[in-house]
Image (cartoon, rainbow, N blue to C red):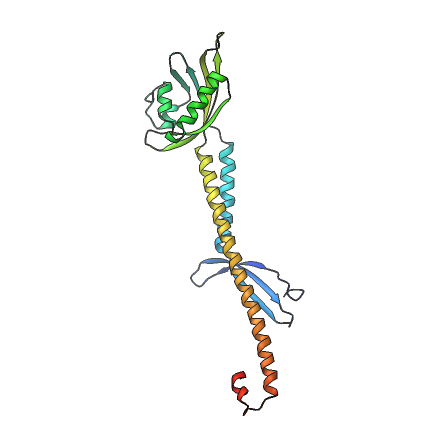
Length: 238
């Protein structure tokens, strides 16, 4: 029971259904001013599942964010050769030595939606010494895409012409997937909370309506005390 009339103290229990499935139920006892006790039950199983999945997703996201899988690259700007330190072939699904070690080969695997942005950032770094750090997708041999963060620094000669650039690519595919999963679960949780709010509102309206009916019924009983059964109003009130 609640300690004060109108006060609600919810308690959450796990119950086992007849078919053996388990559900999480939020029990909300309410004591009315009349001294009567009401009990509202709310099924919050899906919300609890979503919250648990969200916690697991956030843990996976933290683990993925701590992981590092860098590929070091050395670009000879004058001859166009791009040397990779790390297993670039395995990362992209190629046989050993199959992926061409050229700047053109790297450019071709950049996702079309991000190609111009990445190449513009690279050009601005070489010409205006702007920092180069980009996030983009690259296409593997099987056609799938993975996410990379790419950063690097060029070297310029005494005339200001770039002749070499060294950098590193980190595969952040798992982190991006964890972020996307986290976003979906957040939205599912928001939708679940909206539905719960609608349910509570409906329960409150029903409770208020029942109180009004109780008052109407009380006045009707009082009116019947002053009327005889032969009175035309008796039947309507009854």
